[in-house]
Amino acid sequence: MDYKIKKLPKSEVEIEITVSEEDIEKYYKKACENLSKEVNIKGFRPGHIPQEILEANLDKKYIMAHAQEMAIQRSYADAVIKEKIQVVSRPKIEIKSETPFSYVAVVAVLPEVEIKDHKSIKVKREKVEVTEKDIQEVMEDLTKYSTTYKDTEEKAKKGDRVEVDFEGFDEEGKAVENTKSSNHPVIIGENSLIPGFEDELIGLAKGEKKEFDLIFPKDYPKKDFQGKKVKFKVEIKRIENPITPEINEEFIEKMTGKKGSMEDFKKDIERNVQDRKEKEAKQKTEGEYLEELLKRTKVEIPAALIEEEVEFMIQDIADDMTSKGIEFEKYLEKTKIKIEDLKEKYTPEAEKRVKMRLALQQLIKEEEAAPTEEEIQAEFEKVKSFYPEKEAAQIAEDFEKGELKNQIINRLAIRKLFDKVLG
Image (cartoon, rainbow, N blue to C red; front, side, top):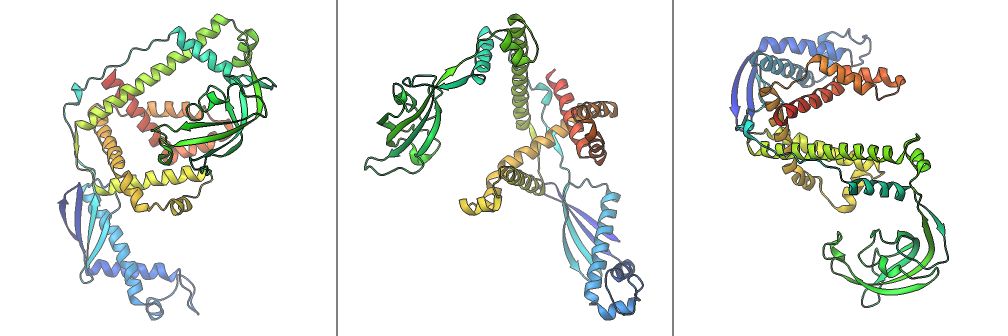
């Protein structure tokens, strides 16, 4: 086997390989052996069909195609291993000649990443403080989630939950599409409907009807409605008063599962809010650091890596739709969105993601932030502890297969990296 290697732009390598006639003969014989196990020829047992009989029953070109496929797999792997080429994609193969058999493999390789003076990146972390207002807001949310409602004959007021029929009409009196609903639940004052709608319900009694005009906001999500004037006709079908629980020892026990004082309850809330704010501040700091890191990173990204990332992003969208009972193909058909348009749309984000990964890999290497085997195993044990005992064997099997282990390694490496560069 002879080969020549040529560097291409965008971190790709061209490997031109010529396989000797002698080697092709060996692969041809091996192809015959393999095919003899797969075909049925009367009078011969599978795997025991002589080569001349096989050739008489199969097209020689078909056998040679199998031989060439084996030759490509073996010779390509040998060249990559011998030259220590760090490939990051499947090769694109083009056969150049049949005799002697030669082909060209173009493959994306791990690109060189240059990061300019990352040690000078400075990101100020926000100081986290929990106020009395934060605690009161949490307590209000807890009472809101625990609020129940009872029917009333009183007129609707702020805080009441009502069920309302409504429909919108244009200035010519024609019904406006997507503005009709029956027994629509609304808590007056939560502003779940367009601005001004809930205010018009205040003071209405059960069974009472009303008409009023509203103008949709200029930034309304649906463009067809932006700035549109609509006349709504409404009827109140049901009114319920809220029953808001009092925050006492009984309420605290119900929320926490244990008895406790108001003081202890507030301290628990304070700790939880502190943790949440710390995490948010940490994420914000890391995000700002990564954005600055991207600006300082220079790398030629192989097109194959970007294409793979785009495919992953689209598959992720498809899986998410499937989990919600939406068929991705039917969605594309209904919305008349072409898959090529989706690929074009997500290419810039895919390129950014790949660039970020390459920059982080380089930084982890430079900062020696790769986790030790002991750290990996300790993290795995922590992950395993979250699962029921009956699932432990499956989790261990997933870990040994590599995917879960790789996830843990990446998570630990990034955590160690941020500890080093951000303190």
